Length: 160
Image (cartoon, rainbow, N blue to C red; front, side, top):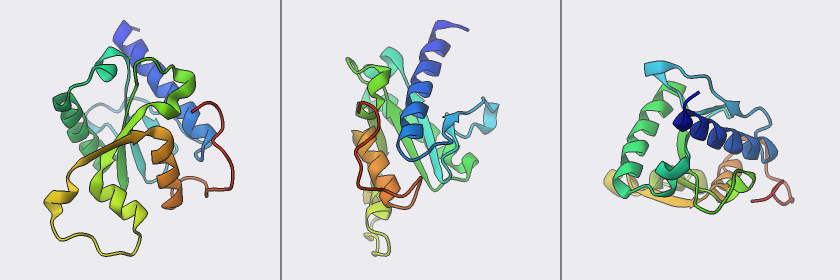
């Protein structure tokens, strides 16, 4: 396996382990599917995950993130998922603390997850804005929105 592939695999495994410990016990790396790619993690019904690791993620420009979000949008459709999340490894934060890595999702998805049943704002353009927060917070929002196991009065498992 080449070096970039190893870096990506390690990042995907770290995210899968974090998800397993925090609401998605069946989360695991997805086998490559070629042109019909459906994201990097499987076992998380309704959610498509795209994981970027190494220096490409740590030093990602806004243009790179936008390109990866377009890729994620396509993969979310292939996966038949409701929401897509882009996870970016962060400098100085190792795989054992993947919950602190950045996670990006679109504002429209965030509104849908946090305001179930509420009317959406009128401008679809305003919803097409990426929002970045740590993976642990995105996991909490997703679980509160009905994805993964229900939230309990517990702390995250493992280091976040």
